[in-house]
Structure formats: C-alpha cells, structure tokens
Image (cartoon, rainbow, N blue to C red; front, side, top):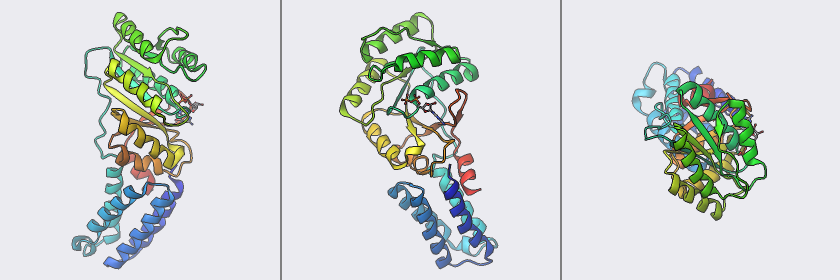
Length: 297
Ligand code: GDP
C-alpha cells in the first residue's frame, strides 16, 4: 500500500531538502510533482486540488522560504496536510454511549469485507472493550451469507442470532433487538446485505433497518483496493444512509492509496478502522499520523 506514492513523494522531497535556499518557483514546481503523484495514486481530483492549494499557500510564505531549512519545512507542511486529509489526529472511537443493546450497523457492497469486518469488530469489542456482543446477518440476498456469519461467530466466540429461513431484513433486525435485550447484550452488530452495485432497493433497505434499530454507529465498509470506485460507492452511501464512519479493508494489499486518501473528504466521516488481513484479529484503529508517516517514509 502507498508504495509508489511514497517513492514518488520521496524523490520530490529529497530534491527539496537537498537545496539550501528555496524560492517560490521551486515550491510550485515541487507541488506540481506532488499533484501528479497524488493523481496517479488515484486520489479524487477535488481532494487533490484542495490539498495542493492549501499546502502551496502555506509553503510559499516568507517564514518558510526564509527559514534555515526550507525544504524540511515544506515536508512538514505536506505531512500535516496529509494527516488532515486522512481525518486529523483525533479520530473519534466508536460511540457506544447509549442504553444497551447499542446497535452498530455495518453497510457496504458485496465483497467489500463487510461480514469479516463485522466478526473482527465483535472480537475487538469483546476482547478489548469487555463487551458482550451479538451479531445478526440481515443478508438474505447472498446465499450462505447468514451461515458465513454464524461460522465466524463460532471462531471469535461471539453469539449470532439463530437463522430463520425466509425472514426479511427488517424482521430479522427486530428479532435481533428483542433477543439482544433478553440476553443483556451490550452491543448488537447488524451485518446488512450487500449488492454488487449500489441500487435504490439496497438504500431503501438500509434506511428501513436504520429506522427500526436506531444504530449508534453506521459503518461503511469499503475495499481500499477498488480505488476510485470505492470513492463513488462512499459518495452514494453518504447521500442516503446516516453514516458515522468508514472501515477501509485490504489495507494490507498493494492499493495505490487513493481510496484511503480521498475517503475522509468525500464522506465527511472519520475512517475509524483499517482491515489489514484475512485473520480475525487483523483490524486496527485507523491512525492518520501513522499512515501519513508511512507515506512520507
Ligand atoms: P462481504 O461480501 O462484504 O461480506 O465480504 P467478506 O467479509 O465475505 O470478505 C470477502 C473476502 O475478503 C474474504 O475472503 C475475506 O477474508 C477477505 N477480506 C476481508 N477483509 C480483508 C482485509 O482487510 N484484508 C485482506 N487481505 N482480506 C480481507
């Protein structure tokens, strides 16, 4: 992940640092190269524009150009702007402050890693937060989706709602809430149905489930390998579902990074977690400064 972006930026900044003095033209030339590197990494165009404008404005300031280490200062400005682009340093954790059962609704397209992430999150809530969790699959579209969650539940030792064949998503959610109340569950994770593409029926279903379950968190799961597509998917969901955050999966893959870098700006929502592998403990709290650090080497 980010390898080629990191290499490209590295060579731009090596050049800058190598010089004693910098003038405005040097900075503008470097920013032109940064712009191309970001676009090649598949970062959304409006996000790139805003980033370059903001960094250029700060970097051509006299205090930077007249400083003893102007190259170093420009790199610091870029680093801070990257952290900001990724959501700033204070990523809010999960908001679980409500009367139990607190509902977390997981949404996203089929294949994004939603079911796996639901199980990863249940495991994390149980082990790191000491919560009694339950999972329920509302995916009646994909054959075996409910069974898949059951198997994952057994692996992470978290209860899943018993499957009743033929039941529809809103009814499953209602039953899950009742079961969670009866069993004194702290957190109920609803793994909603995915689709291959965003469609209105999916959005209507998400809205109906949200209306009856009043989730405290609605997390959009997106595959970071899908680049610009992930950004388009996020835009569609943001417009129709009350998202509270994003989970980026396959951050262990060799994505160019555009999805990760665009997501915050496009959705306006924090990236809360990163999936970093197929194993059920491969879920990390997303830390913008660490990610920026990795990009800038
Ligand atoms: P869903 O259709 O969105 O529910 O997707 P699944 O949860 O079934 O995941 C699809 C595939 O992606 C599975 O093989 C998962 O093991 C894999 N997967 C999910 N998250 C990650 C991740 O963060 N990294 C990697 N390498 N694989 C993942």
